[in-house]
Amino acid sequence: MSFYKTIARFYDAENSDKIDDIQLYAELAEEYGGPIIDIGCGTGRVMMPLARAGYEVHGIDNEKAMLDRAETYRTQFKLDPKKMILHYGDVLNYKLDKKFALVLVPYNGMMHFHSQEAQLAVLQKLREWVDDEGLLVLDLPNAGEVFASQDTSAMTLERTFLEPETGHIVMQQSVSFLDRVSQLFKVTWIYDEITSDGTVKRTFAPLMLYYYFYSEMRLLLEKAGFEVEAVYGDVDYAPFEDGCERMVIFAKPV
Image 1 (cartoon, rainbow, N blue to C red):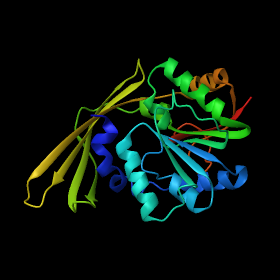
Image 2 (cartoon, rainbow, N blue to C red; image 1 turned 180 degrees about the vertical axis):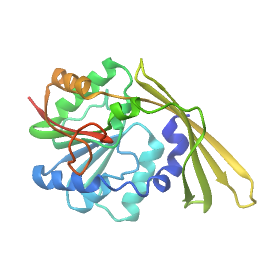
Image 3 (tube, one colour; image 1 turned 90 degrees about the vertical axis):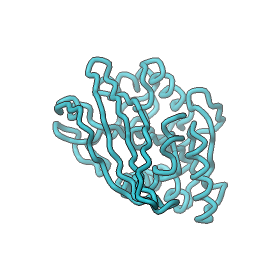
Image 4 (cartoon, rainbow, N blue to C red; image 1 turned 30 degrees about the horizontal axis):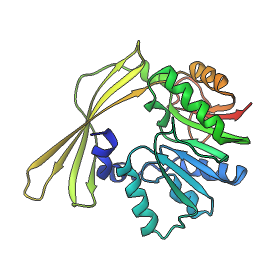
């Protein structure tokens, strides 16, 4: 079972406070217009506010369980299906004969591509989809900060939240390991769900992510036909500098 199929019913509850990047995408949408595509759109967290604002927003994801939830929300919030358009498939081989003013790869999306061949292939695909006057946005963690941190094999409590479908309290924990040679981060998310009779149901969801350094990403983008226009240390345009948490890259087609 894929990671996102395993955690689909937890995803929105555990990420309910993840709204800090929406203002950035709204401002870029106002500047560049539409259509817009959200790569790895999941349940539509980024898509929905942009569709509500009247933009034509496409979203692609390779996990149907996540897209099913996006479709449910689209119906629930009475969003126009012509404004919030869902595509089920793998971005690496998905055929879409359309150009976009904005191509968004939100929060950590590029980290799911682990090999240099796959990383270059996806950026080349996005180069096909972005309009010549458009913009690609990548939101990634600042690898330098992560690589400087101390490893621990301890189980870490990440958050506690209420799972709305069952009303159960869920404690989300993690155990992780960073391979600094391969740049792969291996994490197992552990969801302890307290059921109505007081027993605990435990769900394990392993995931592997790839950490990029800025110079590496810049070269990948150049090879794929982009040039970096700007890089920021957060979604609020903070400087990209030592100690910043994020690496938010704006890239233009060459």
